[in-house]
Figure 1 (tube, rainbow, N blue to C red):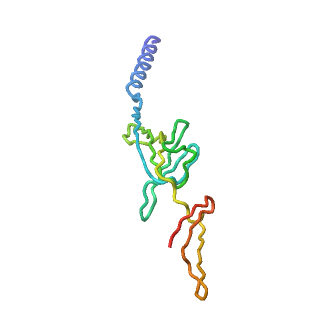
Figure 2: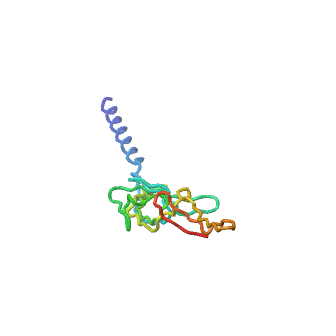
Figure 3: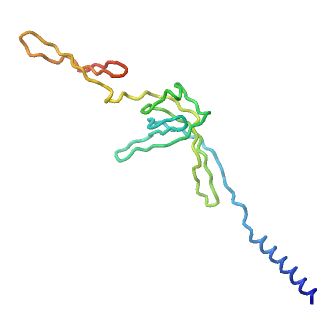
Amino acid sequence: MKRSRAAGLVILIASLIFVNTLSAKEPEKIKKEVIIRRVSGRVSGISANFIAVEYAVDSSAAHEIALTMDKDTRGVKKELNKIGTGDTVAVTYDEMIETGKDNIPKVKKRLVKTVEFVKAAAEPASDLATYDVVVKRKGKAPFIKKRVLRSVENQTTTEGQ
């Protein structure tokens, strides 16, 4: 009787191990890929490890992408610390994508490789002061000969009529 119980117990344990082995899931395969992308647009924000680029504007919204920069990110035509908000740039970056067993790709990281300076930002209107050149003539009413826009910071002059 003891032998039959021991044999039954061994058969039970062996069958549990066999069933457990059959029902074990295959490890999930994650497909990883890196795609090199490029975006051009106006810088809407920048810091030592981050850049945001507004790449499209339509009547209802602006489209912006936020990207991570690291110590290997380099500036082209201008140093990174000289690029500011409003400048136009072309950014090349690596996009790390993972696709799980559900076959839905997920962007895990966007890492900037180069930031190419294209064009400086236009001076904001709030930094400009308007000066009128008034001509006074004896016996006649004074008139404005020309209007001058002068930057308060840089003291640059733009003349207009």
